[in-house]
Length: 226
Ligand SMILES: O=C(O)CCC(=O)C(=O)O
Image (tube, rainbow, N blue to C red; front, side, top):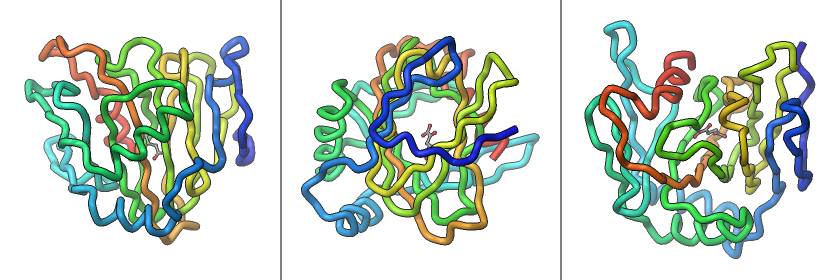
């Protein structure tokens, strides 16, 4: 049975016997720019693109728009293709600094997701690509429509789904074994008719990823399920 939506505002939820993921929700990130101009700048300045995915021999578009920015060396490889990040733009650089201060960690890349409305989504996955390291710190900034992120245990399927509402300007920080022990998803919803932008700041730590191993396997699976 699922729990009802929970807000963890400002509370650190530690990983107690794997019953909770190691996550922290900062309800409102301190940022100089006002919220609506920040949203407009991200909406207009990020090079959003529709990314296709082939499933069962059929090519469809992912149910959201995406962009990948980062330091020149923050590359990842899948399906034998090396993906290079776009160079940082000023607004993402600014946000990176604020997010790094809040998270107490440094990041060399950011995956940007634009959910146009409640029909856009992300299926269950873990951010467990090898180049992120075994216990990555991932800081996920949300602006725009409020959506609910679901966490499901990868180990104990009797643990109820944890649902966390992500308000505009919130920062969710995932640490420790969260990616090893939990999957997360942003389900579709009929209740949301406006856009939301999500930026997940990450650090790519290892570049020698084998071509036969898909480092974004879990994300592709998520896309397939979305
Ligand atoms: O949009 C969100 O809050 C989730 C994004 C996410 O799970 C990801 O980029 O891996």
